[in-house]
Image (cartoon, rainbow, N blue to C red):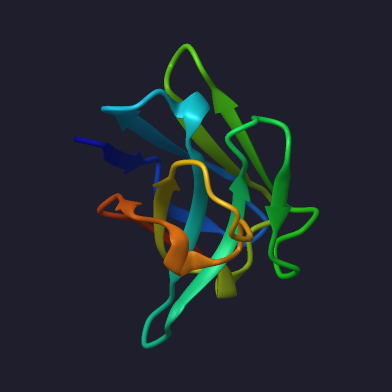
Length: 125
């Protein structure tokens, strides 16, 4: 059974940085495409970014491009989301989600079938 567990959330001032981790168990992270998805207060889910199972291809939402970076540690079976220059509008619960090989766009949230429980990120102004 595939499980994903996020950690690293917290409260940070605007302009600060955080690194989220998504530990994967039950599958090697090298065969999963993993996305980060967020949900702000009273809002729907929003694609943040994703890394393809090939470990090279990434895709980011325009709202975070240039500020957020996704990377993967195969030995740790973990995917990371490095967030810099944080803004109050980045406040949300951040989820990681995984899927095995598929032809869908990385940004297609509904294509991910493994989800973590989420970690709260709060950016104060």
